[in-house]
Structure formats: structure tokens, C-alpha cells
Length: 306
Image 1 (cartoon, rainbow, N blue to C red):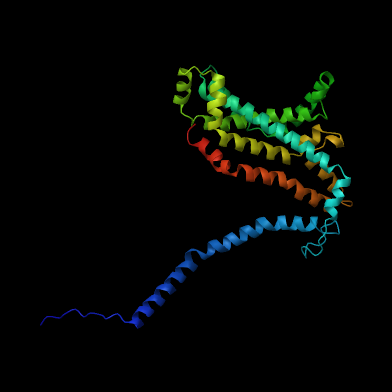
Image 2 (image 1 turned 60 degrees about the vertical axis):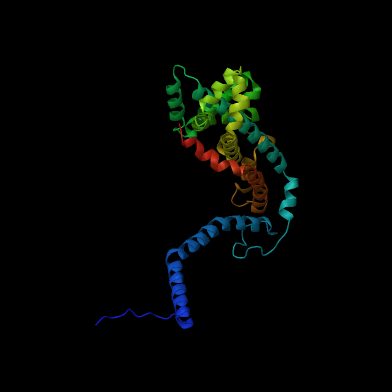
């Protein structure tokens, strides 16, 4: 006696039951595999955004202090921003922008020239020079602070423009400290540019200078943008070197000048400090927005081939 397979007739009721069961399974899977990611994202966003909101609240507070931490934006006023006009804040902004722009430009040019030489030329000491640059960067800058200060004291007796309390001297110190790391970073990026491009240009009669400026430099724009941006941010946030070298108030950078407002615990003017911090963040924000399309490519492409 043979048994015939029974055919299950699909009815609207069974379809609804199947859909409900499938939806329930998808919800359980979402809660098990995805929900914790959203929770983690909320925690990270809160952790990153709360200090910014707190500083903005203190900058807009009319009390000029940090006492209103339990009630953000309890009072909103622009008095702290208006009081900045009675200080040397805008002078410090100008000093910081000049020093940062000059350091960024010099870092890019010097690092690109060194990286091009190490990448394209073969000369005695090439590998040893690269290794030396890398080893030097392993030592922290704090080791050289005393030597830098004494060197500038002696140099100022001969060339006052390169002595203590000189913005030009501070720029030179920044350039010397950033050359090794940036040259090594751009060296890897220059190696990703095919050498056949150089050879074709030389066949057409181009010199090394023409190849460097007209062919190679446009091709490595992402690396140049990243190096320049990192140099600018480093100068913008540096305190120790600027505090040691710049001794007069009219030469101070933003970080050094704003520190004086909160250096005394009993007389700390947090209202001015937070208002200045909000304005000081704008150049960095603008720089990131301007160069954001270069950042990822510039940071990763040089690590592919070295």
C-alpha cells in the first residue's frame, strides 16, 4: 500500500503566521547582533560630545565660571566673547596663525624635498640617513628643551632675530623637530608613484626640478595636505616650546596666552578661557573640513609600498 505525500494548502492564516514568526526571528536577531552596536555608539557620542557642550555652555554663561556644571545653558550671554576684545586675544590668534602657517608650509616643502631625494636618488648613506631620521624621532622632545633654550640664548647674541622671544626662532625649532617624521612619512608615499613617470619626463627633456614641481608634487597632494594639517595642529596646540621661547606677551601664541587666564587657581577666569577656546577651535575645524577628502588617502596610501 503506497502512501501519497500530502500537500499542505497555504491559506491566508498560515501566511500571516509565517510572516509573524519570521518578523519575530528578525527582531530577536537584531537585538542579539545589532542592538549593542547602537548602544555603544550612543555612549561614544556622549563621551565625545559632552566636553564640547560643557565648554560651550561655560563660554555662554554670564557668571564667568564653571559653577553651573549641573545645569547646562542656564544663562546664555555673549559677554565673555565681548570681553575678549579688551585682551590680547586677537594678537595671540594672529601670532598662532602666522607661526602655524609658516611651519606647515616649511614642513611640507622640506619634507617633500627630503622624501623625493630618498625615494628617487641612489647615493651613499641613503639607507643610513633614513634609519637615522627614524631613530632620532624615537627620543621625546623634552630631552632637547634645555639644549634648544641655551642654543637660542647664544644665537641671539649674534643674530637677534633667531634668539629667545623670536617667532622666527620658534618656527625654525618646529621645522627642525618635524623634518624627520614627515620626511619618513612622505617617503613611503613618494614610493607609490611609478618611476616610469620620471623616466618619461626625462626623455622629454624635463629636469629634476620640473619633474618634482610639475609632476610629482601634484600626484602626492593627499600626503602634502595631511602633513601640512598635522603640522598646523601640532603648532596650534603646543605649549611647552612656545612658553619657553616666547617670553613677551605680544609674542605669545593662543595656548600660552590663554593659560595665563587660568594659571592662578583663585583668580582663574574660566569664562574668558572657554570663550577663547571656542573661537580657537574654529581654524582647526575649517582646516579639517577643507582637507577631509585628503586625510584618509594621505594617511593610508603611503603604507602600501615603502
